[in-house]
Image 1 (tube, helix red, strand yellow):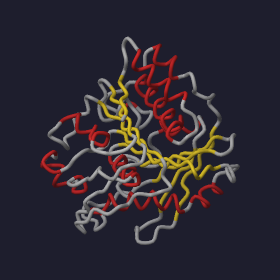
Image 2 (cartoon, helix red, strand yellow):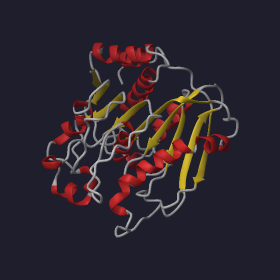
Image 3 (tube, helix red, strand yellow):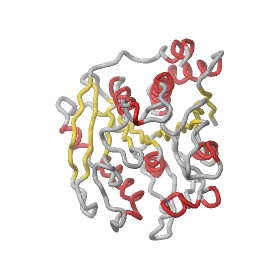
Length: 315
């Protein structure tokens, strides 16, 4: 992030607060095969705290995405992170009968968290009575972006039932989709069509919830024949209030959002991560009706910068 970008986006950034993080809180999950492990991170001060439910990328866990989860929590959000069944920490065999429906178990994980907010709230010392349940956002990276998108109205053609069910959740008021898969069909590589059947038929036409889509213009995934522009589909193909942050030079890890260790990213760039932290934070505060000044400042900073790290467009 350039000096001018930082100055503008820092206008409305609140001072960082100490946080408390509790893990694992295990939720009973009948039919899942094992309990759902969850991590909750929250500021130690403040009331009426908005909530972000965050879905990790394929193979990660509740321990990932510290650069985002920690920033959001130190700046006033309660961040809830499940470990999905595809996590390397679970070690699900490829021939496990649950594998074809991993995408659906992920959505169920997110909904289970929303259903069990009372239990999660009391699991964190000092958090009781401080949640704002009217302001809940869903966010996710990569596979987690599709998972969050389902709660926002994205429909997935289930490879088992062959139906594209509405799994949206009215409790979710805004979303952030980071490096999230686009259109299926002929846009997929043979590898993606064979190994990741839940990518074959996404339908963005019903994804009406306000959402920020974040994509890198160097994100060359082996999943689509279209290249990096494929990751912008969730913005272009969905109706309603949407914004798109395109990051210049960013690959799939978007500079290192998946973790603090260098080995977790292919394009380490702390300045880019800092920009994502601030833009996602200001966007969610805007979309959840908390305040608009930060989001306005973030857009202005990128549009007026002499050497911007990205661009924001909205519809």
